[in-house]
Length: 74
Image (cartoon, rainbow, N blue to C red; front, side):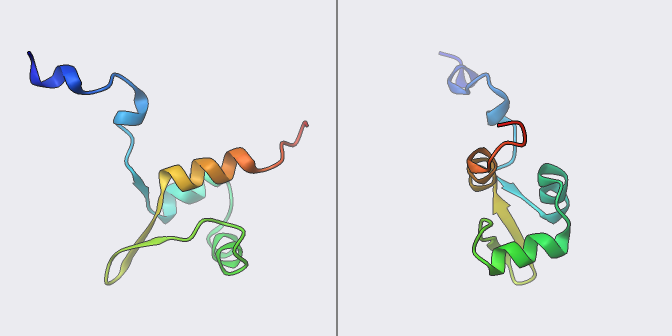
């Protein structure tokens, strides 16, 4: 059995599990200040500390948040 045969063939397998601020801004279309305000108001996913001076958001939390938002057309 080949080693790589167990690796799923999906885009999710190649996407990082964590997203830093620049990626979160692109993903959501929100600005840094808005993201931090929404985190304080507990209406946006909480970041995770990666190190003493580094934070990121779990991709799964951001995708869940995005899917639960009301749609503009609906």
